[in-house]
Length: 243
Image (cartoon, rainbow, N blue to C red):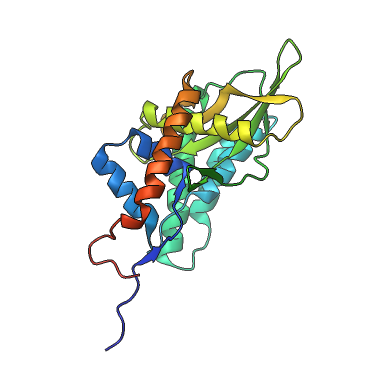
């Protein structure tokens, strides 16, 4: 008899994405267990990703003359493109839906008017309390104050079809962005600034800047990651998982 087909991939080193860490910090204990199980035992089944939509919207923000019509054109291009499989068709359509939804709320996004939008560049994982944390940046921000001080920021996108992002989750993710920029200086004599470290909800158009208690939040994330690292080995797999 042949071996059962693998359903999950085992992640031996404690690892979590910035998205899931933000979700984790705002979750109930049951929700936290679910998140960690999904991080340690990653489903092999193909999952729809929104890479094309994120790239299109990042270009929109970084454009000198952003036009909603450009978003509409990109969404239509995705709907019209050829697909080699039903899954590929699904991915293209989901990305088009993502773009179309953001296009309806793009005018609601609040970002400091003096901020410059630039390419996300390279970014690396953080090691927090023994946990590898993947960072997600869709574009960076830079502004010069009246005192000629350089301030840096970054933006991450969040999207859930049919519902807005909970503000508390956005606050956690933006606080993490602020701390990340503080540890990975990319420009001499520049400092990260909370109001341009943003988690932008693609469903509602609301931009969540890093809150005033971001330093305390990051300390709480450090403590949470230490606890995650300590319990990683004892996290049990989902029922019927094969890996």
